[in-house]
Image 1 (cartoon, rainbow, N blue to C red):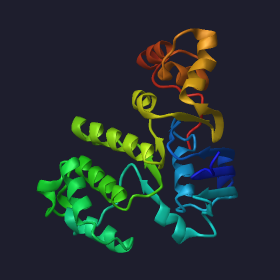
Image 2 (image 1 turned 90 degrees about the vertical axis):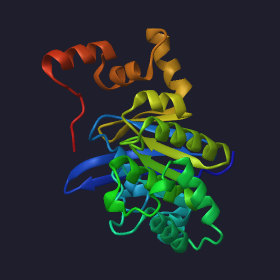
Image 3 (image 1 turned 135 degrees about the horizontal axis):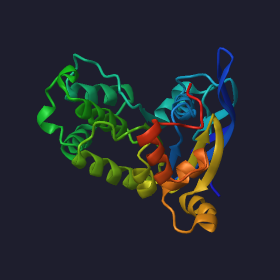
Length: 266
């Protein structure tokens, strides 16, 4: 098998004595879409920020396209795009300015045609001269995605990518993620929208209190629980794995007692 595009080996991260992630290992190969799921505080965002080089790892080794994240930070960032759940844009720059700036940073030539196509695909073309400060939450998310797609990275990380997107934007993003994976990229998506994860992801990483509760293909996850429960949704699997109860039981408890998670928050 080819080398993985994303490799996380025995990764650990602690904050002032609090262990956020411990002994986490997984790999994502070309063409794979990995969904990272787990309740709040499970370590999803911490792991993605560490892979992106934003947070230093306390222990373990992280690599992108064979490059160690700590040893080759600039080279890694050329191969990777990270879109957080609330992208921080330049308020005074227009939509078009952001794409031009991205092209300049990554040394792209002849990127105008791709930038225009992305703006049309994500329905931002009419807003191309609008400053980021005047965009809606969903439009800012779309712009961040367009900037990430522009330089065609081999590894793509999305933290709650559907936040604020309208139905058209959701469909376009899902189609583009599938297309990028089919073209050989590796994609990592952290999301609480389990139906979307089940629909688009080839593999699942389930985190529980900073540890991997499961890592494998989506079908392997279903098979593991179907042996015990019969036909079952990813939502039911999530609650059974994290709380030992079904989605119906969890919904009933939330309606009568408020939300209750077995995991502790950060």
